[in-house]
Image 1 (cartoon, rainbow, N blue to C red):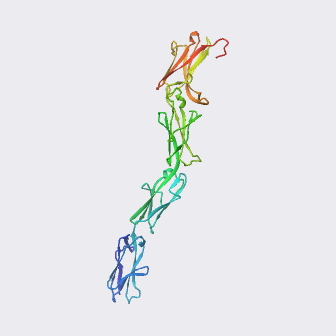
Image 2 (image 1 turned 90 degrees about the vertical axis):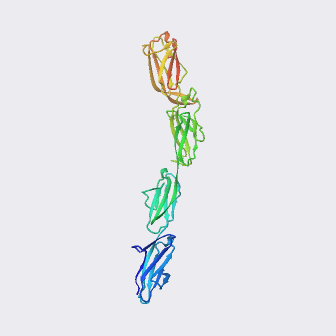
Length: 392
């Protein structure tokens, strides 16, 4: 009777290894008996090939991925056996897996919403699934189903699901796009031009009017900028250049709503620079002979003034004289822009105290102030108080 039926090229687990689309030979051998046995290869209870002329039988297959884990049986039988000898193996076929990624609801989402990634593959046995972002493994992603809650703009990027099937692997990429309203801030080009810098997705923006407010945040005016977000401030070379300093706010939108608001805004306090400017061209002041008086001039200076001195028509005034005292304080002064709009600017108040007025003191007093840009002069005419006049 036949003995020692075995299948060659198997491992300890009775697996025959192969690769997709590469022929695999299944070969079994037996020590023959008498009468001569019949060797057969059987799959799914169907005889694939049989032979009774040899103690070795081979059957060639061309496997695809569907052959993986199929079980084949080699059988030896003759009329003296109560039951045929049988031995079985399973196929272990390496193949490149088919991988796809399903994104729900879709791969373009709004910031703050949720999305689900699902990695689909055709590997039927134990496998390794890795998620990667921009080619780097994401350690926290451990299953084929991944849930993003409260999507952030930093979550945008190219994600890959990589599936290992034995020594073969394949991956599928998906690009996650996150739409978000723009962050907005103002860029000062230091030449009278401002830019409304918006960064959002999508990056196509519509700009509203700019708002100009005083440094104390009092609204002054709305100004039309360019369709590309630029604002050019005119008349900075004029005598009233300092009126244009203040807070500039720009507004931009890209179709994405944030906190129920279509337009997002950014602001910057802009201080234009120029020569010092007197807030009044000529000031009249009255004094009483024999008494002291104080004359004051308010002046705007950015950059801050470097030096100042007083003088009369007859010559300069110095602090070494007991006749005069000078002082400088920072204060607020209410001024007017465009007739009907008033706002506050921070100004310097220069004061000159004159003691024991006499006839020679009734003169024109001129303050000369300089900063790094240039210098200017402001004047006060001191006049005597006429008896019976109610002027102070």
